[in-house]
Every structure is written in structure tokens, then in C-alpha cells.
Image: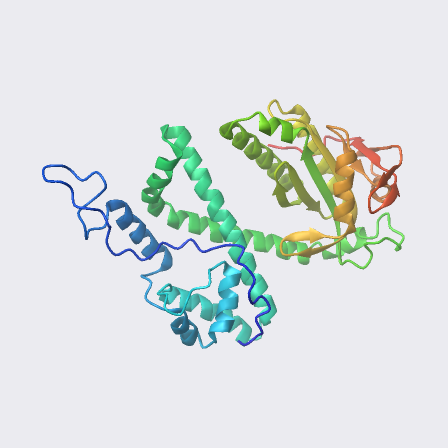
Length: 391
């Protein structure tokens, strides 16, 4: 595998949480007749460091014994090409003398390279796919650790710092189960993606022309989707008055509720940024149902504030797990125009929903929106039917 390093010199976004190879503790000898409060005698690793070392060996599949040139040579590739894949995974730039790798690192590198050698992936695609794995698992690990620490703090009444140290001893009992669930979820999610590609392709193509005349700014983009935003009202002012625990509970409640409603509605949660969630659905009706359910859920919630919600039917570009295009920008603009507890759509989306009895469409005063000029917002409300039903 030999590609020019297009990212040479760029800073890494993430770093591999490596535990340095421990040798001995540097604790001083205690005075005669006194216990050593800092740890065991010189030359002996503390119980905590022994636990960390044992966990690292288990997670990495062995002790670090290889340098980067040895791993690259074993995989039959240059260090330059290997570094591109390691960067994509979020590893730092190890030096030639750093003993940082195990045989499992070499096997993983070989697996990726074999996909390229077999012609199943181009080099560019291999790097992009590898980066998706690195970034998603990095966020997942941080999320899981914080959730476990928070649970220990609340249930055991111990300080945060103590919980983080104690978690090291509990992780070995969790690793295999968490890994099994990860693989299970990946396969389920991949299957769902296959269904969207194949089973729903024809329906998506038919729906993609609803409410359109072919002159829209997003016409060259490949995917027709309903794009929605939900934004908590007065989040900034509320967060300033909350302590860390209360703010964390509010954010978690917001994300959990959004994820549940979007999933039940058959949509996909693209990302959450603070007090705002971005989601997509495959038809205008599905997007409308999700949007109305979100607005209603936060209006009825006894803890969370109301939400402003918007939804736009149009074309998007999907890359790097995110979505782009004028449709996304318009939906974001409409969110700021919506009143708390309501859903706004644009005129084209309203046209796509106009014959559906499940929805009521109420035209609003025209607005001048930056980047779009004059637009004609329409308030979306519930018509016939119950809407999404949550268990």
C-alpha cells in the first residue's frame, strides 16, 4: 500500500490512551518503624499499577514488544502508509524507538491492508472506513467510562476521583460483555443500512420528487431525506443556574428522549450538539411524525424545557457520518424561527405533506433568512390519527 500522505503534518484530533510501560515505582523507603503511605517499597509495582498493566495486556492482546517499523514490515507495508492508518484510528505518532505495539496491532494492520490488496477497498476508502471506526469507538469508550463513573458516584456515594480508580478493577468483568454487545449492535446497524440501501430504494426514489419542480438549489445532491432539528428553549440560561449533576441529568434526559422518539419513528439521529439534535427520515411523513412527537414530548416533560423543532424535505450529501447541503442549513434557520413547542416546515415540505390527513399546515408570515432570502414558513400540527406511539 503506497499512497502519498495527504495529511502529513496535520495535528491529530484524538490520541490513543496508552499506559506507559511501567518498570518500578519511584516511592522512597519509609522511615524505620513507620508505614509507607505512598505505596510499596522501591522496585515493586503498586496493586493499582499491576491492575492497570494486567488490563492493558488483556485489552491489547499481549505486552508491547514491537516497534512501528517491525509492525509495518510484518504487514508488508511502509511506515508512511502504516502511519496513515494509525492516524485514522487515532494513534499518536510513535517514534522509531517506541516499543508501543503488540502482535494484535500487526494483525489488525494486515487485515485492513488485505482489503486493499484484494481490491475490495481503495486506499482512500480504507482510510475513511478506518477513521470512522477510530472516531466512533473513541467517543463510545469515553461515553461508557463516564456513565460507569457517574453510576458509581451516585450509587456508592464516593468522590469522582475515587470512582475512576475503582473502575479499573471492575472493568475486567465487563470487557467481554461490552465487546459482545458492540459486535451485535454493529451487525444490526449494518443490516439496517443494507435495508435502507436495497429494500427501501424504490420507495425513496418515488418519494424524492414530492413537492419538487427540479429547480431547487439542492437538486444535484444524491439523497432525498427529511432533515429535522430540535432545540431546547432557554438551555443556555438554564445551564448557568445548574450544578454539574443536574446539568448532566438534563442533557442525558434530552438525548435519551430524542433517541427513543427518532428510533421509533424510523429515523436516524445524526448527532447531538449540546442542546440541539439533528435527525433524518426517509419520507416527508416520517419526518413530520418524528418532529411532532419531539415537540409534544418536550412540552409535556415535567423537567425539560420546551423545544423548537423544524423539518425540511430535500436533498442532502451524507459523508463522515454527518449530512450536508442547503436542506440542512434551511432546517437550522427554521429552528430559530419556531415558537417553543411548535414545528416549522418550509413551503416545499408543506406541499409534500399537503394531501396527508394526519397533518395540519398553517402558513406563517414570510421571513427573510440569511442565505435563502424570503421564505414562507408553515407551522406543522397534528391532524387525524394518534401519531407515534411510544411504549
